[in-house]
Image 1 (cartoon, helix red, strand yellow):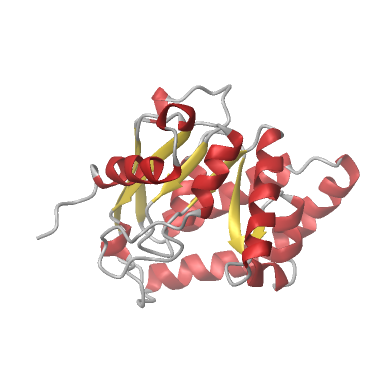
Image 2: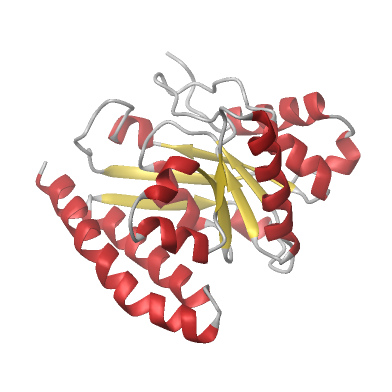
Length: 233
């Protein structure tokens, strides 16, 4: 429990400190890159404070000049601060619109080109896909948890369709990502973090143009992610 409290206390103190440093710089320069890197380092440090070691597998197979759509399974609140710092280069994410209402945090996310999504409104969700495509055309990766929520048993849930419309619209390669170990450290519904090793596995990129249709792309991504998940007992 001590490590959990240390990590949370650090994040509570880090957020306003990061805003104090990064906001003026971003407003002056118009470049959110510094704020992104600063935030990623803060998230990574909080993960280490919680007693988590991150093992990255397969990232070397990615082309550093290419923008990708990263799609990962989701079993824990630990997944975003573990997966996103492991991604190569600056990355945007789809975030529930409610989070953008949080003071300081919401402003920071807008400045960093994160994309709000409203799943309860179909037209708004379609607009979010268009906004995400616009962000990616600027050379920024997109990280998505296509299940839309955390799995309670560690197994893959059915995917939402929106991320795959984005992949087909942009034509950019999809990289399936498997995060393993976080379910045991902090499953859905538990506050305490158990120290351990988290593995982030990058699979071979999938070209949407070679797949052809949404359902086939969804199946290919799901099979790739599942291939590195622990076997169900």
